[in-house]
Length: 321
Image (cartoon, rainbow, N blue to C red; front, side, top):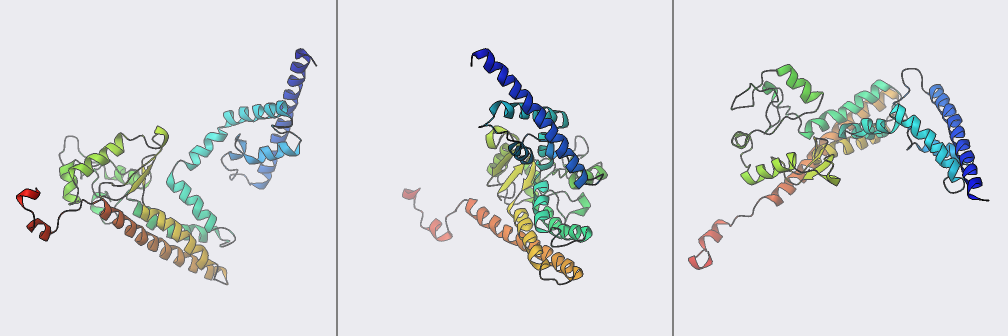
């Protein structure tokens, strides 16, 4: 077979793969619409080049990268066109680009339909886990309602222009919206003001954290995920697209979800399962926060500089200085 014949064969195979993929995707879309009622069609994950279902359907049609490379290329060209036009792959990013979205998926896995058939029961149980966990993340301080739950060491976003003390705000409703709906903490206060709220804050820790917050580009230099062993309060913290993630939050979601699942399965009736899942979720979440706080304290203690004891100070002589 000469080069021209090979090119013609490649073009035919490419076209065949393209058309086969188109037919497969029509069937996949039809199946998806039948399985999901109107208003609950999902977010288009099935239209991504990353979707495993499409590759599986291609294999059943006899198309694979190894055996039929030209058809495989044609098929994925079709898939890529649909993906780009429908934001198939970008939808994954939109769905999973926040730690709370990932945590929600974890709760859905543990508190599922097999455990609780009622969607209301599942929602209530999920909230029993999530509310303490999110509070532990540090985006708001539940003990500071008079300042719209402003977290310790952070400024209000809408403090009056030119004010020296940015702990007060001129737009309380907007502060609450951004704090609870958007999950924003605001910027750190200036050092002198922050130290009033965090007495053990040092200039070095403050400077390191400001550098982490505004200069560190994190993993792969993309600024998406980054971490520090000392936040303003001297505790370890991860930032995912600016949202803080800490040990108490992770512990609360993990233990709360596990406890809700275990406790819920001990109930014999739907009412018992709901009550026990709720209790287990809340108890597990609070236990996870406590365990995370222990981890924080251990790390914070290790980060603190070791100073000489009183006896050691007394033994210091000019020759030892």
